[in-house]
Length: 324
Image 1 (cartoon, rainbow, N blue to C red):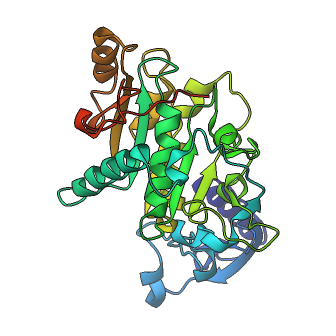
Image 2: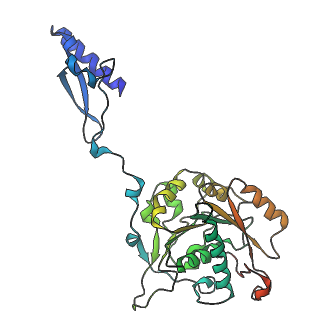
Image 3: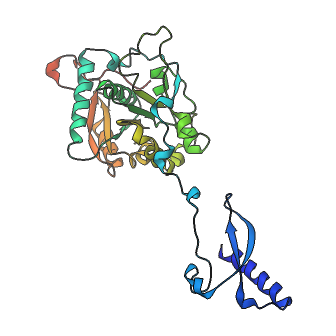
């Protein structure tokens, strides 16, 4: 701005001097029009009694019209009812939390209650779920925990597929995979365009309890530059924009022992759950995953696929499923 102003001022002074005009009484002030560009130049008289409108060098003080105020993030947030509705065909085998009763349903209710308890001591809304290696059950846990949250008092829940290399949540929910997180982080789609929720049943019957309050951001197209995208500040920006719409946000991420994607996304989460698979995950794998996530707030470890988990004497978190 100063270089443009100085150039305009110099030209006006030279013109005035050539015409024999007194230059001390004139000054050129560029005016900011509605398209935020210098559209016209006005020559105005500067009166010393009005010097409060100028700095010590008689340069005009900047002003910002009210209509050019930067909109708040809240004003950019779409309403929940405006999220596009898509046909969903959820997998009853993988989404046990859709059932009204059963051992797995109770285990997820217990996990949900434990997580809700953390809110008594610290702010908690955004939870990232990861594992050390693939096939340990992180996507299964992410989807079912999100549904369990959505079933509780019809809380509004956002489920994000942050595994942009091998997304799977769209297969569990039976819905389109694009556009999704990849497109948003790449700058080709807006937050509003990548969110979807279940379309009401054509016959008028209600959706399964837990789906009506659930919103999904799928992974989108497979991203070869997932590490770069996940490290972008746009992910934190996305969460800030959509957070006011939801009671809970659950993020399924890539395995942290193999790539940095999950570690990058974890920086924007309020807490992290690590999934390990009974009889499969080695101690060293779990320890390394904990080390990779040392910069995040660990909420705990979920033990998946425990033999005999249907027996209530065997405790909690005995889920019998792997990532699709």
